[in-house]
Length: 407
Image: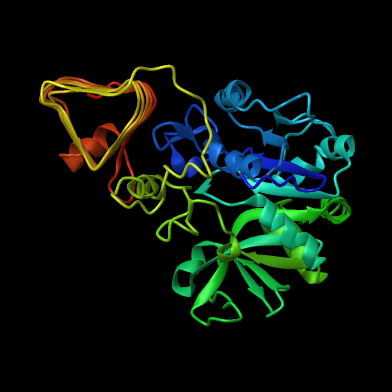
């Protein structure tokens, strides 16, 4: 932890997205509640970055299928009430009429009581479904020093790859001159013509500026009431927006290989690829950085066990899992998984409670919680059969949703 408490800052986490592109992992849960990396849920990354950075008043705005997310936060994320610290989920409350949130900006606009109750000088508005480490306090310090109304976190990406993101054009001082969604010709950063700032979906606002722009946006009938699509461009047009270069964020314990890592896991293929980043000897994203831990619930389970010649190579294996006479290769195995005699699991992500039967083969797959793979079943072996029975991503990843019994 930094040991620094940012001055009078309220954290708001936008966690209301449906996550349609992660189907079927979001069939029964909100996107930020999707399990990740064995022990975690996606929401744990942003909350860890805020709490480790000294933000201890945090509101998580929810909307769709939020039960598992609400339960996870209430059971896991408990701060000190004696010190006035809290992390709380806030459902859509229809405070401004009988309607749900119509966009991320509208979610904050309808929840202004959270702001008036705390009277913060600054508000950190972060997304809930990215995998990364970031000291939020450093970004807040940069925002205060800049004098801007809003500061947008930007990560440097090659211009050829930036068309999938909201892109930031900025002058040499860091003031944003344009903010465009998925442009055909992304703007270059001032010091490198081959690189673009992609928006990370993390913003720090001066409170009065945020309230003023939300009020103006709420009156605009042509607005989608979206933070990135509407609010930030409004402030760019007024000259009140600055960019924060993510490469300047120094996280304690980061290795040269994983420093500056950030993944948008909005699709099945990107979610799968992010898991692949965890399992090498020197991982692209290091879960074992104890100086900046990703915090989550502690599982009351016995250690993982390997019996009857069971082995796991280049893999992560969670507590309580038993690999019994089976072979696991290049996979992430969550807690409380059973893989039985003669089974083979390779290049896969297996979530808590899943069972893989004797002699079954699972390759290039994602098995959601409590999936049952019967003895001798084949998954990821015959692509035509997989497409008839299961969801298959554009990249060929076979996905079995929560509680599915494989055919």
